[in-house]
Image 1 (cartoon, rainbow, N blue to C red):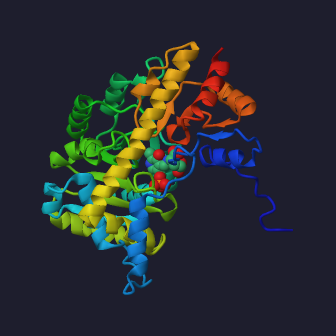
Image 2 (cartoon, rainbow, N blue to C red; image 1 turned 45 degrees about the horizontal axis):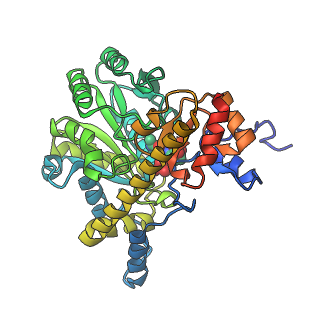
Length: 401
Ligand SMILES: Cc1ncc(COP(=O)(O)O)c(CN[C@@H](CCC(=O)O)C(=O)O)c1O
């Protein structure tokens, strides 16, 4: 008998499993609105032109080798990533108060940060928004933190439950870790306003709560890298400490290259250098050192002003296409007179619309219309095109009437 004979079949991942089901569906008009991965108007994955150019430069550079990277990854990539989120003129960077490690995309950055906190921080409770990205709970739990929720989304208004958020963070024990979506909240597409962010910052700092920003969509919410980094920069500007996980999966289209960075903003340079040394002890036994190719692409783009500007143009085009899909879906439902208020489709921002459809309605849409989306009613707007909006509108209309 196998020593693993008693192992049971694991369930599919709630998000990545949607793609598994989609791939099995033979229907010609199936639609994958599950995974948050950008698709073009033709419904195809997109490799940015500037990424192709960067790769060409790398291939042509005969001096490049395939040696191990340092445990913390490409040093120049780390510096450029910190600048991207904190701003070129960040005092924290100028004062050498930022410890950065190249990690395996956003997930890896979150995990390394969580493992570091479990090992070195006096508080092991992390508060995450209700709802949040499905993988957050598992990443933090596996790292040894205990996960609690703070109220975030208000189903009745389909907006932010700001009072509930402030109450829950106000009731958190001093020093608790708080996960904050830097922009384009997943799955709700609901972000605090700048004024609300300022109130959140004051409240958290007054209680010594430790912010852990998850920045997976910088540039995708508004189309502007700087605007989407504003909440992070407000916290760093007050001189306090915070963790920031960055992903280049969506905004550079480097999904499968697993490119990301964890930055820990500290109060003093000597602390940052000791923190950096301890980060290496977390990473070395986990995966030793990160992959060279994806980070080299990102570094090539970030360090060359022409390529950086070209990237910003392509990034804005992706954000704009998503916004136009919002408008088209809203207009299609309005034209059909679909019962209900659908204005949240155009009010929400980033990659996802949190439709408010329940799991039975989602199951109906999958069965009858071959629409694939997560059971919480989230739709990845990037999976839509002008051609497929009518099909989705028909499905939603049928699901609610
Ligand atoms: C808020 C948030 N943080 C981190 C990540 C992790 O992204 P990396 O690929 O590790 O950089 C995602 C990706 N969430 C998308 C993509 C599919 C997934 O990993 O769940 C989603 O929610 O569909 C995310 O939405």
